Amino acid sequence: MPPGGDLPADTSVKWLQPTGGGTVSVKTAPADIDSASNLISIFGSANSGKSTIMNHLSETTAFPRQGGTKGCDVTPTLCQLPGCSSSLAFADTEGIGSNGGHDFDVMLFTPLMLSSSVTLFNWKGGFKKNDILNMMSIVIDATDKMDVGNAQEMVGGHLHILLRDSAPSERLQDMLLTQENEPGSERRDDIREQLKVSFASVTVWGIPAPLDSASALQSSFDLSECKADYQKQVNSLRSSIIKQVAAPKLFGSAALRPGNLFDAATEVITELNNGAVMTPLDQIREKLR
Image (cartoon, rainbow, N blue to C red):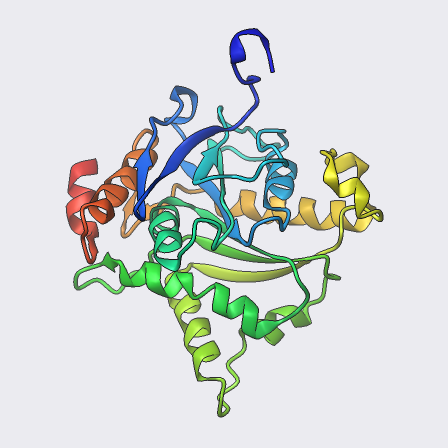
């Protein structure tokens, strides 16, 4: 760390901070990224490689791999990716369940779901469809926190489900997301349907292990140091994201303008901290005009 205790210029900064009692405080967004028109966020279990893949996708070293993320951290400056004309910010979140409860996870995820053009769900632990979908039930509870009025509108952007240390396969999409319609599958099928209606698109990716040696994963490493099949999938995922952020994120049916993306999430957090059962999107949109 540089003299005086200042963080390096490329280190992520705190945006959403747990305050205890199941509430979240909002830190002021860094001035450099207040003009972002698209936010890319990630959620998933702790110690599953979220920070690593966000560094590789953003082509930064913004998110430290040691110590664990608390709340939500964002890149300190706008990310300019080759071939992308949009201004991007990346957000890394703490592991689901790390802060002690499902309600807090929903509190943290709800504003991110609303304000992110692209959401990544990171899973590591083999193909266990029941466990994967159960963890993703946070989407259902976050959606229940939103009052869209009479409009039947999607509240999320594009969702990418990343199955880590898995070989790429076109079958993964069907294996995870196709309705089973069998006795005992009702809960899984309900979650699948909610994902379908909540996001503009849902894509499942098999992401190979980045390195051969498990011990090497304990330290930071560049994408160029990773295995070729991992590099290929990360580059393909980044290309897909770039296409999806060609237009600004829709906050409900209204486009988020550069400069009010972080204001939108702040309004949602304020409503939830004040005990709102549902977040009225129409009222929030009016405040952002």
